[in-house]
Image (cartoon, rainbow, N blue to C red):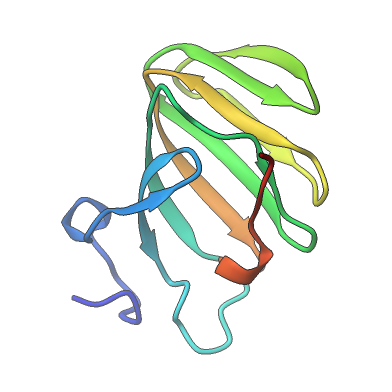
Length: 115
């Protein structure tokens, strides 16, 4: 299956590097997609980043850690949901596996990493 199929097995997609670690992205290339879905494995070196146009919703599947939003840290555990508005600098901290739902669909041109 490809990421343009209406049904995707997330764990079968190729992982790609992202500021948080590794992401398996579905539906980002779907014509007219209003959202995409990513299975994300957080790494210890997750980088603070933001999006100018994209809202993200994180749902923690496994692990415990923190989400940093504009410098404030919040504890998260399985089934924690996090709403990240455009412009909010953010990163995940800890050994986490999560679903990320970007709205609109992921666009690499709208990802800015703080140095």
